[in-house]
Image (cartoon, rainbow, N blue to C red):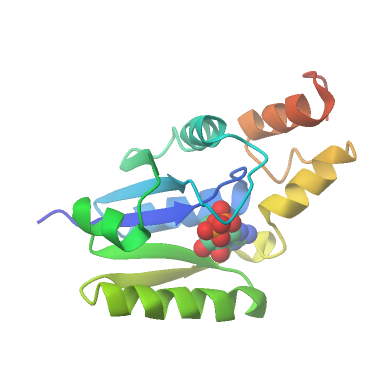
Length: 165
Ligand code: ADP
């Protein structure tokens, strides 16, 4: 049977650390679904449509992935899609408590689903969507931190034009 995994996130917006996790996780499974979640607890800077578009643009080079949006509970969504694993990225100690709690809760709700952690690439360990947005708002050069489509979108969002960031 084909091995399917889900990589969920807000991706507000997707950055090079996410793309690195996606590229590596895609090698471990037949198909990786990157799921853009509409999280009630968060107010995103980019709309769900924008986030979905940017994830698609940034992952076009990876053949075995599907990009979708979901508003469902993660484990329910993963079960409906027939996934056997949930992929999450781990940066530093900072992520651990939160990810540990979510993974255990998900395991309690869906014991057949495994959470697989991909350790961040060394050069992305400091990278977060929040930091990228903050830098972009100050006109800092973010071109080495995010895919080209995202750099353009951030520039549009914060400065309303598409010049050099
Ligand atoms: P969420 O809102 O669900 O935390 P994010 O879009 O912030 O979603 O992140 C999605 C996943 O990617 C999370 O597992 C997060 O820990 C991971 N992640 C975020 N930034 C990085 C990074 N620089 N390196 C590796 N994983 C990362």
